Length: 388
Image 1: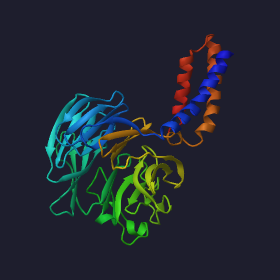
Image 2: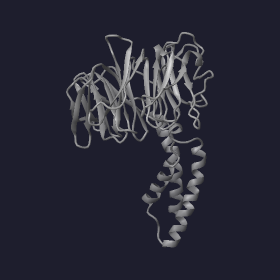
Image 3: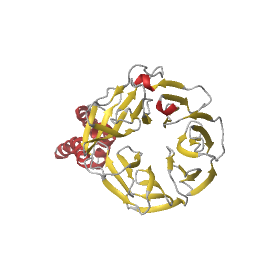
Image 4: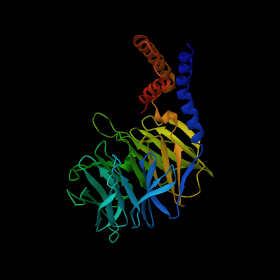
């Protein structure tokens, strides 16, 4: 009887403990490493390691022990992409691009591009790397190209003009590009670039005749967010059945006077948006539901007064990492409300009750107690089924 009561008390505390632990953590940015070289970009490789590009090369670091694991390039690195299976890393300078194999710990190839690399993505559907290039001579010309994992140029290339930003969604085969200085949002099929893209007139969507957009973002479900130059964020929702986008006015996340959203990130495998905004001299971090435009949670953000160069969510989606401009990389825990589905705190106890009944029945059949660590493992595994 005592063991049963102990078990119920412990596992009922799992949700509350995790929730309160996160609430304590998310108000504090934790410094995971202080670099001697200025970092330009950083991405998670595993939950315990990151890859950092800087002015003197590219390194994989252990963020738990705060040590360098390996240097993968000695050339300046300004862009990074990590394959979803965490076995390959693409790194790029101004015009050079290379591929590193994490498993073999070897650099597989290094190639030279004709134009400057402004972004790159692993296109897992056809085992290629998507490259967005900029012709600095003509200024207006941009190109989208592909390289396979052997480094060979392949498939079709697309020439576009006046690109403001690009974003990629592997799940929906989508490459979103803000063209014509942000007036047109083009959605390309990343597996067939030669196909005519879907185009959305952004000035019509947000009812602004002369938009000056900064960046676009896309979720795993295909929803698009546009972070405009004036600090507003507009969300264009995608119909899950037809794949079409609404041509009515896009929903603006906020209408708060003197508040400017400076950065926007989509939480992986969801339509949840993370924003960082500034009201007067105070910074805050918020998670939003991109479909309803509702705020899910708000927290203070002790933001260093400097630029965020890059960000990344850990593979288990429990941490978010920020790469600041002054040799500092910091992390925050992802809130419970974001990691888990709605009403998890209300529904989980009922599932625990059923689990307890199942364990009691199983113990009666076996005629012996199931070890405490096994029962706790079952409870944690049950909680994982509530993750988004």
